[in-house]
Amino acid sequence: FKSELESTKLRKKIQSIIRRPNREEKAENLSPCPISKEMIPETELECPSTKDSIPMCICSGKHMVLDDWTFCPASGMPALMSEYKSYIADNSYDSEDNSDNNHQENQQTDEVDLRSQEKGQSCESVTKTLHALDPVYGNKVSLSDLRKCGADEALAYINKYNRYIDDAS
Image 1 (spheres, helix red, strand yellow):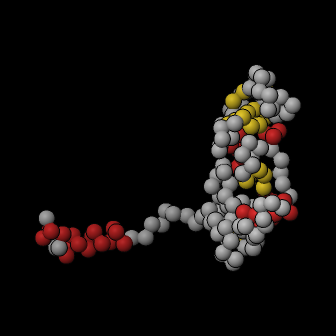
Image 2 (tube, one colour):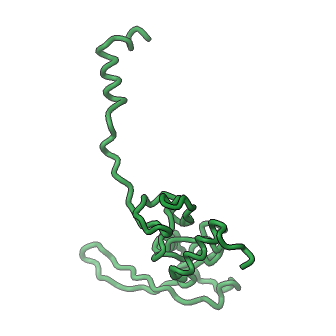
Image 3 (cartoon, helix red, strand yellow):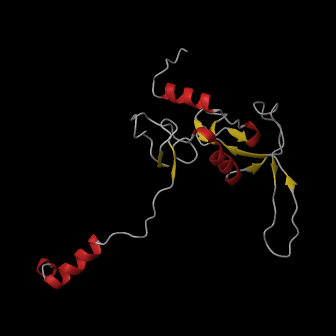
C-alpha cells in the first residue's frame, strides 16, 4: 500500500487535495469590542488591545456588545438583548396557567405579530404570552422580564468580570 502512495502521480494528487485552500469558508462577522471599541470577530472573547476578558452571551456564545446588553432575569448572566429575544421566540411556549408565583406580578402580555407570509392568506395579529426556559437554570422567562442595560452598567459589569472592582462594592 505504501509503495502505491509513493508513486508520484498519486502522491501529487493527494497533496493537491490536502493543500487546497478551502474557499467556501466566509469571514466571521465583526462587532465592536465593548472595551476598546475596535472591530473584532463576534466569537472573540479577549480584547486585542488590553487582553481583558470579554463576557460571553449565554444565548449565542458571541462576545457582548455595549449597545445590545441585557442580563438574564433568572441567572443574572449577560446576554445580547437581540439574541435573547430570538431565543425566547424560537423556544417559546404558550402559558395559560398563572400559578407561577415568581412571575405572577409580571404577567404582562407580550405582543407577537404572527403574520402569514404565504400568498392568499390574510394577515392577522395575535396577542400571546410567550415564555421560554432560561438557557442556564431552566427557569421560566418572558420578553417582558428583559431590560436593556446602559453602557455604564455594562462597563461596570466588565470591570467586575475582570476583577477591577471588588465584589463587596
